[in-house]
Image (cartoon, rainbow, N blue to C red; front, side):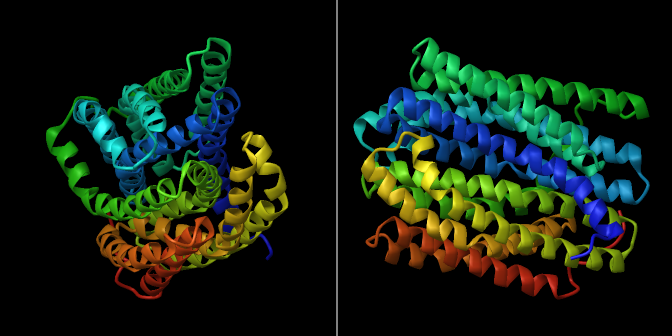
Length: 433
């Protein structure tokens, strides 16, 4: 596939976004490796449970990044730079407020939330410890989301890359020190993450404040603007709830298969997440390019960019799938997996690899439609694809980990069908600011 001018623009956004996106799962994989070597299988399973809860909270609030990227990019395409920055500032204020609410609500409920997974008493106790400490980092974590959305909407994916590498490198270093050096156990891993997230948020706040002052945009909280940002993100919230239901059901079913299956599932899920983040780099480019071209009223450019990004998504999915197959024998050793975990993990990585080309199509078109502001359709599509997944998951629950991952593959196929159908139509091509 020859590289065109359009491809260069896609890559200019996607390559730094790729680095920023894969930094998180890479360093989370480092956390799993540190915990696995220092604390053993029980702690890895506990980290998988607590990580699923935290990932749910983060993903429920991902509209802070996605919605902000789309709104800022559309305003930039329409030539409204001051309004674009104001939208970003509203998103940052909303992120901080939501983070404080999550601490207040989830802290006392942590034992009940973790208990829903049905883990062993040892895993449950460790997961509650990790979850409660990690909740203290949620305001910073959400501010990072909103700040990232502001910069992506302004076609800056380099700064998020630098912040991600710095904060996640610090996270890995602190976790190694706290867990292996100071012997703080799983609590040390949580404290390392909280400190790194908070420092990352401070950097984003400094960047947004500097940008707002440069163009004269107000930094004061605007209740009307925050409400608008929250309302615009409601459909994305529904979409994300559907995604999290799917992944939480998978985690619960893996938990009930036993400690070894849970540990194998947790590691395979991190590999899947790493690949998802990598493919999402093209989706990030899709959000920004689609928002800008539709904001400028250029439908032809939107369709042309979408076609190219889908090709990049499929090609990347093929490459990532092959890489998983090649690296498969090495993965269990990275996490000090015991023989039983290793056996289950090696089997589960086959479907993880084989579904990557489909994931490439899904993530790209998801990003394009978010950039177009087509969140309402994505919400309804999320509901229907979740309903398609649940029977497959229940049927797979008695067939082991491979069957469970195949059920997740059924879900991805259902998502691809709904997204391709929408992208081939015209209803999502709404132009202007």
